[in-house]
Image (cartoon, rainbow, N blue to C red; front, side):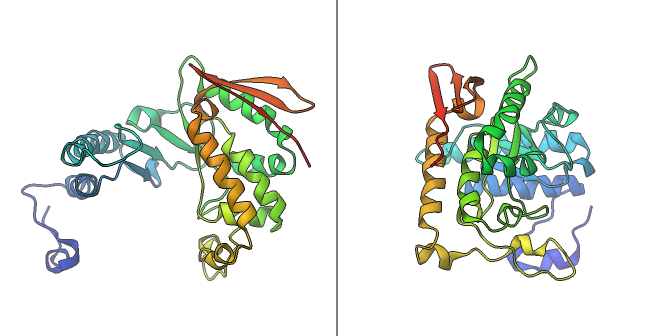
Length: 271
């Protein structure tokens, strides 16, 4: 493939011709150059179903080699894990083991939790069948992982689904951050970022400006502090995301997560 002339002349792209390269080779080279130069340690792959699985396998393999190279040159860099991590966006994937895991993906985005978390924010015990079901599937005989969320750029904002209720937005932290598997905090989940204006794209409002003014004024300090506390708690205890789930009591709602030496008991107390 010959490089288009506009790419050859575009200084900002720093594109150099690759001998006898295909489109796939150019894209993988550019993506792994970011990993090698900046230490990027994971990719969220949009609409993964529209590309051959062999391409994702090659990307993962070469991204790992590039990350290993970055780490060798930057031993002081603090990165979460030595393995490069890739998650696939495949609408409307749920909590199930699919063929995308054979394409070297570490997780697939779970589109189910957003609706389920609304009830959980109103009352955390409503999440028990969700938590138990997710943990059983993810830790089953053929274990896998999914990435769950409560807001995203092309579905909806939780703040809007919760009717802009700050109490529900605060409680949503527990519903999301106690969910088995990987979880994603979308910008503004922790500060009740409001839905913005739309144009020809009805989802444009989900990509509104971050509500920095509410954070700087302290308007959402209690909510933000709660999200931080639960996020740090989850970070300290891998059993929350990757452990087995055992219900201790429904009323009051108490459950146990267990992974190796890490045992966490979580009790829900409502003020």
